Length: 171
Image (cartoon, rainbow, N blue to C red; front, top):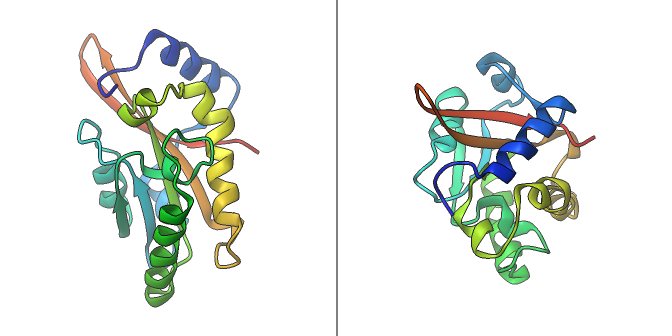
């Protein structure tokens, strides 16, 4: 559920860092990924600030709903293909009008919707992120090189709450 990283998630986050799956980025690096903005897909969970972090750096159009990009993973516990396709059709229309092709799937942990359906951080990263990418690659509109996957963490540390986003390196 929403809150702070579980011990299991914290251990997996450390594994991802050690193995190069989490790639830190600067604001400038993120800005260079898009021309004419982009579209960010984030969860509606108000306990994280991934959406404001990204919005402050690049002028993305925000698509925010519970589960965020998980809604496009076929293994998601509440996957609804008709709804997912409808959302993508709307995004394509808006992106085409705006002249942008950059797509930012912003996952986060902990995620209340992932917890509700029993999806661990490991399962999200190793299975669901790839399903989301495959879903968008099923549309000729999306250039695979412009589909960016990020993950946002909320950590409770001795000196307070720390939040950080990373690129997911799943190549």
